[in-house]
Image 1 (tube, one colour):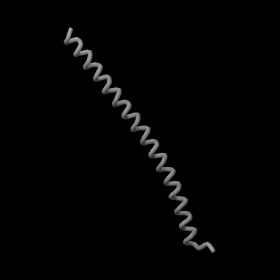
Image 2: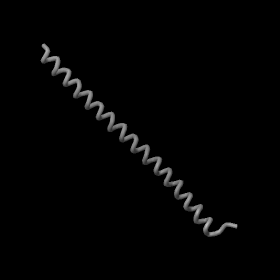
Image 3: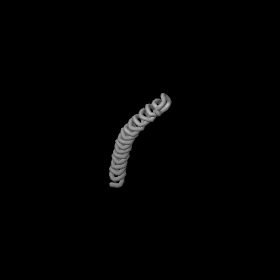
Image 4: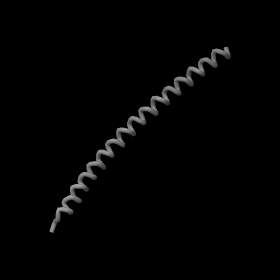
Length: 61
């Protein structure tokens, strides 16, 4: 025998499952943006390092 309380719990569980899926999607989007940010930062650091190397080489000559 299914009571109203059981129906409410089932609906709540279904809602939580949707929330978990949304949370997974959010985590994936966040991870992708963090990877992009880290990649851009590393490119900037590499560019700065190369510029410093060029300046150091010019001073040595």
